[in-house]
Length: 394
Image 1 (cartoon, rainbow, N blue to C red):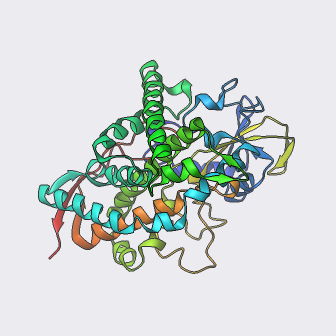
Image 2 (image 1 turned 90 degrees about the vertical axis):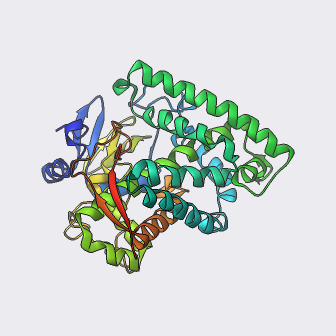
């Protein structure tokens, strides 16, 4: 069963169910297996025996590729390099820095909503889901307002290029390379500006972050900038647009969402996972799902399936925005788990909760299509557009 078939993009959940019911590991050839169950996905994400395998030369997804040549290479590193960079980044990416963004995000969402309500009918992706996280990450990094339009094109081309090269056209691969090069040149200049004159933004924090005399190199900061641009933008954009579609189809969930937006975001992440297919590689001989797997075996973790596993979530195909209220609830895996748990998860949660809260507090939202177009990406699951009608609430 090809869960990557574009025909399944709008509704892959029946295929996920079939995979879960027919086995725990599904070989696809070339030493790569699909993993559809929550327990197995969580075990792989938490186990240091599983990594990315690029620096060890055993990655079966892009054999022979240097992670330094890929966008967001920080994500693709294994210990000890990954732990070193994560430790340094976390010193700058603090909860206080994220909390300080709340007033700005609220004001941004309200400005965008003012324009959208004035227009009456808009593409929700372009009008709200795209600019909220992009503007926020630019604010966090300290990108000047006049330069932010550049980032929209870069994030589009780099995000598309995260898919395996085999599914990309020559034009898409060329656009990815050009975007990475242009971003690196711009960001290198911005780094030097912060080195000469630090400010209170995250980029200054990355430039001056230090642990035991160790600092990030310019190349490492540029790679982290690419990662933040993509991870800090793409996941939230897809969560907001897919969440609005889900709430359109389950309108009785809007009132409980407004009562507790933060809890609702956890359920919307579970219900329609924005990054459904992360990969891992066995760094040594391991056992998974009762099978012995040799070093270099690749797995594709079907997080969209794991987050609807009935062994973990009661009535998993039902949207219930109160599902994660209370400490006893199992955690959804949309932000990964273990050593690669998303550093930007608090920011994505804050942006999304504020966007949903302001949108449904201020507007009556009507989605104008039942069959919206999905983006062609395999790595990211999100809508290309979502036409809506907005009417101001009295």
